[in-house]
Image (cartoon, rainbow, N blue to C red; front, side):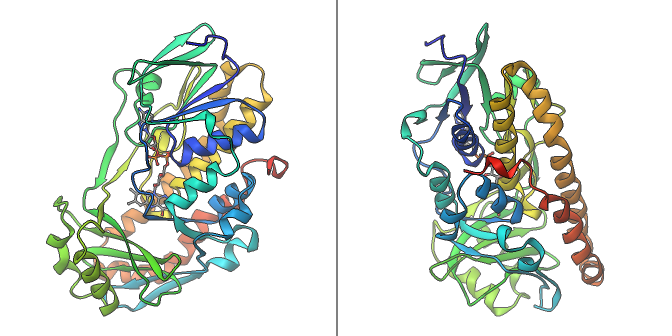
Length: 380
Ligand SMILES: Cc1cc2nc3c(=O)[nH]c(=O)nc-3n(C[C@H](O)[C@H](O)[C@H](O)COP(=O)(O)OP(=O)(O)OC[C@H]3O[C@@H](n4cnc5c(N)ncnc54)[C@H](O)[C@@H]3O)c2cc1C
């Protein structure tokens, strides 16, 4: 073990949060080492929808141009009933403006972008963090293969089932809470959609977002039920428009296309203890009703990297980081709860209310998130 590495940050997890922390630190001249358990990302072939604050954060990470080259902008959002009637629509282009236009792209492209232009030596793949020890210089982590790596501070960016969370919350660390077991993601041919479109029915939700190369990204959820086989819930979508039924039939006829993706969330009282901090889903996984997972992870990275670069004493960084990030995360969680309550209403009530409260709720959720989290001078 190299005990002299008190000036570098260890990052557990090379997903969106971990790679964003790595990039933001590099922009600010702070050394880091990222340890990723997998050899290849689990869901790189699926897509991800990025609202404007995620797009702005990527620009601050120096990736505005790179982002334009992959996926496609999401200019409009529509909410429809199960019979296809439009409940409300939002002009996302106008709401966010040209510098922060929402975007949908493959997860693999996003991960590649985050690593763009960085020397590969500070990212080790196939290395799982197994244990954490505090040292006089900061933190040492023991990897599953027995190797030990030392650093001045550890960022746990290891996702919803974070092992590092135990280092922050102790042996009684709360696990992730299951919100909805019956949820699936897939890629399918784009049936000619131009808007991000959600159909909501009595028994389920069906979302399609255009990506690129004629493909759309889909997400399906059904009420109750824990059967991981989407085919068992097919009848829920019989009353939905033909376009939905045909897309579902296409997906179900191709084994391996559908990824079972239960919704889980993490709400814990603290994200830091000494020089061990949490970022992204490890700290605050939230149901993706407002698609804020990546955005919050990218913003965590920018704020944390600013603090680590500015302050000589890393002991106080954790508390300051959490104080800066909590209000934004609390806001997203509160708005997530509010929309989830609306989604659980009886069909008739939801269809009556959404044309009135839908556009207001969109504005109330996203307007505070239009404010950038860190100074534009940090842009690379
Ligand atoms: C169905 C569904 C749809 C979603 N849709 C969207 C969307 O459209 N837009 C959006 O912004 N968000 C969406 N999200 C949320 C988004 O995927 C997450 O918020 C985001 O991936 C969080 O990134 P992360 O890096 O914090 O965690 P992860 O992506 O989970 O990355 C954690 C990484 O840590 C690694 N790891 C785990 N344990 C260890 C260990 N012990 N040692 C080393 N490495 C380890 C893992 O292999 C992984 O690579 C969705 C989530 C779900 C479930």
